[in-house]
Image (cartoon, rainbow, N blue to C red; front, side, top):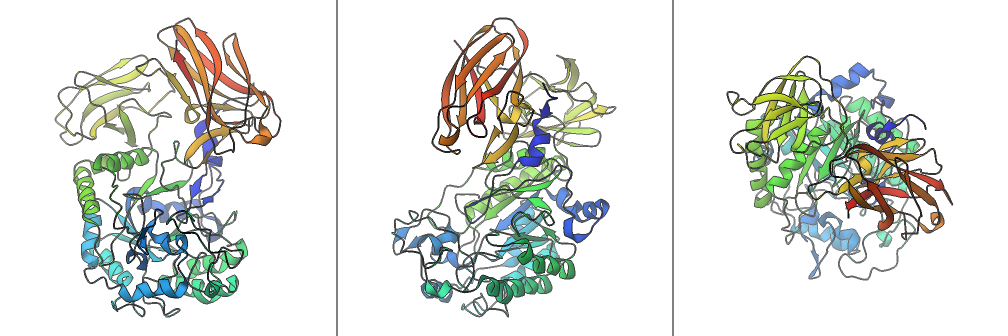
Length: 612
């Protein structure tokens, strides 16, 4: 059997599943030792210096604001169920008709200082706003195209300039989103397929093979890049800097050759700017500085890469008047902590309305998160990912040299926090009240902290553990849940041979299981011996159906065949058989293929062991 690889090392190279704000998937592969310097010609030290503020920030505000806030999710009295900024594409609104919304766009209540204050009070360290989204409407005073907020609306102001000034005044970093490839207004701009059922409207036939629905959209893509996209990028680079971030999106037809002028603009006009990974497709010479998982938190983060989860506060990026499904403060805060514990940043979106107001439910939730950060921000800002491979039972962990920050979601007075490390804790105390100390000790080979009293914070209380010497950790065996069930997720697997982890549609699976030297293993600790029913959660397309695999535990072996689940995205749960784990102690469960029909036998999501 080849040496096992930890999931984190594998995930760094293959974890992908990034979904563009356009709503279609982008697949990326990143090596763990890639530092993102690529075409800038930086040394690692120069790259690290450029990224330093971003790595410390941990929390930023995304703003999706544009002319789409006028229809606000409704077209011809029909609610468009997809995201608000896609209404032009989803409802196949003709170019001239959609442009008419600009005449109604007069955000008289917009106040740049107020917006920046909302972000700053929430504990956000940077802002990224849409300077032009896929509808082609520029939210700045563009000299390239009159289709912009200054020339095409009654507003006659430049909100991007005002926000840049407000950010500089209040000490918040300022960045811009720009949709470089997809443009539904200007001739030649690319256009992804919409969502034909989004508004219950039967879409007319496409005009051309790039999903254009209006003859006014047809034109040369290269001329669009040369005459609209590149000049506008140079405008925003020249007029609103220094910019901290450039957030590209949906690269569509952006080849490496087409992206080079944009990269040259970065080097010439904004050499210190941080660029995400969505400028171009599969260009090994320019992979950007940051990975961009969207609407989900990658289970293992992106070790060796800087990354940022972008997420909506409700179910849309751009404003929809009837979308009130806002995440709770509890969810937003635990998301932030979870992301920080995996070494990432949280770019949380707000969608202002056509009057220039951030919806009050979003403002209220941000204020509540900000209050927590005022007391506990030391555990988030400038922190590093948890040193522990797996999630701890009580919550999440971040770290700084010599200290661990234990974010306790499940506080039990009289209970103990257990950490899988052989390092000793010299002192443990509440971050908010350092004189509130806790007794420390050891148990089961790890370190313990004994909790007393009620939870200081109803969402997340932070206990600081000061270390006595270098940090030394270990991987404990997996334990059953309170009901005795073992759920063996792909994120917790050790991988052998060519087995690889990947993320698709926001879930992690293990694939590339083609021979008996490939496999996924989990080490379990059995407290209560029992007979366990084994179930497999997996996907398999028709061409790979009929492959076989086995589940091995000690001298027991279960063999089974794989049936088609429909597509590689469709998961299915299947009964494998029964295992008798009749002795207390540690045991390793391994799944490996025994027969491959075509490629990987399956995409493995999880094994489940239920006591009978």
